[in-house]
Length: 132
Image 1 (tube, helix red, strand yellow):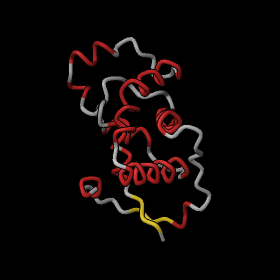
Image 2 (cartoon, rainbow, N blue to C red; image 1 turned 135 degrees about the vertical axis):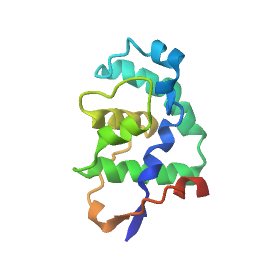
Image 3 (cartoon, rainbow, N blue to C red; image 1 turned 90 degrees about the horizontal axis):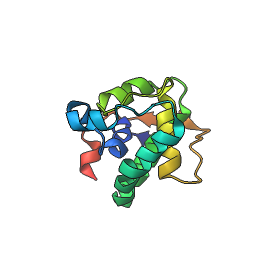
Image 4 (cartoon, rainbow, N blue to C red; image 1 turned 120 degrees about the vertical axis):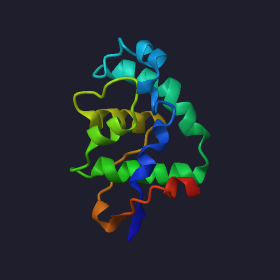
């Protein structure tokens, strides 16, 4: 059985994490329509993609696995994951869409479908991402 750590879902969002407390960032994204895919993808390309590309390969591998696992898991709570990062803009009506857009921008051409997701186990070790 393979192990997946949900805390790696937050790794790609580090550039926007906590910006809900930054008045300047909130003002900058006040007009962003979170349901406008094109606009949100632009933000992802500007802020998240450079960070994703700078990650060590071992970290990218764990992030990729976490995204694949949870995007394939029907009961994943994407609103909770999104909100826990305190980004400076709201989630789309379907928060899972945001994470699909992040996946598609950061892992071009790769499918997130994980047909055998039940052969994985979750390891919610909050310190896991710090060890790589």
